[in-house]
Image (cartoon, rainbow, N blue to C red; front, side, top):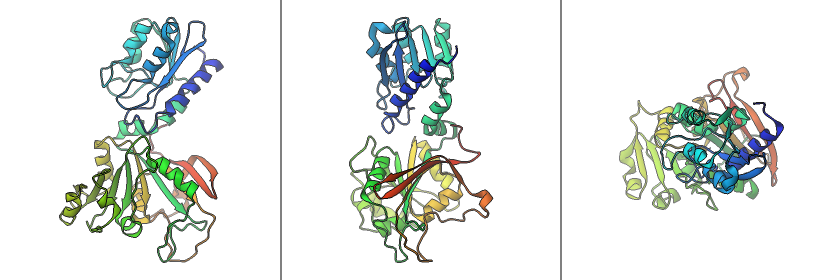
Length: 369
């Protein structure tokens, strides 16, 4: 089958539909689908709307009704062929009488992994794979990373002045960015599985780390405190029963009060503690997207571990100066410019009076998207 401009247009429509499920479907993949009737005319569409709910194909086929018979299903990911939280989509496709399936990519999920496409072919359905595959992989990069590595997709976020400072030399940091930028951050929080800060941020800023207004997900609020020395009075501890709070530490005995107030304490021995160990624990929890909000020490440790996948940087038109004023990313850093981490697929846009730079980390070990 030649990839006609018309089919590509409909696949891009399916990709745009899939995007509407971001934040609501994880750890499932984002999926969109379009049905064309036997004459090639639009008949219905749908997307996976929430975890545990019907898949995109089911919505699209229901919208098409009898017009699906003899038609084409255009879908961003291989249809499932197993009983999970919902029945297999391959059965719904065959029952609807679809004659042709055009999928952007196969699904590497072990219980699918080509089985859905094989089942359709065996039933006489014409199957084509690979239309807009690069875009489909980019769409589901967090899902693919979790599946292949058992680790979440890590977002790094910070706001800084024009001269690269996240606070003044006295520690004053609220607020470097404006209200419009902070609204974008709340939108980000609303689609995360976890929001991560270090002890210093809890002490200095007393953050709440919730999405306001609420988004499709309620993120676990995660604090890294190897020493276990956290304030007895702070908003995270006070609201631990309202939204999850997890503390990673090597001194759990110092956090009995936090545990009594509803926080989950995850203990590591000092020789087992590492960024990698924490990310592995996130993966076991099926966290797909994690947002690291700082400060410089934590961001530096995660950067040094090569764990950041995506960057969200807000640059304010302010100059703070000061040799002692902190920069966003601490840690050991890179020794030479040749070793610098580069961004790709980045966009720069004004957000209120600030500038928002958003891009992906370019590195050899990144999951292919």
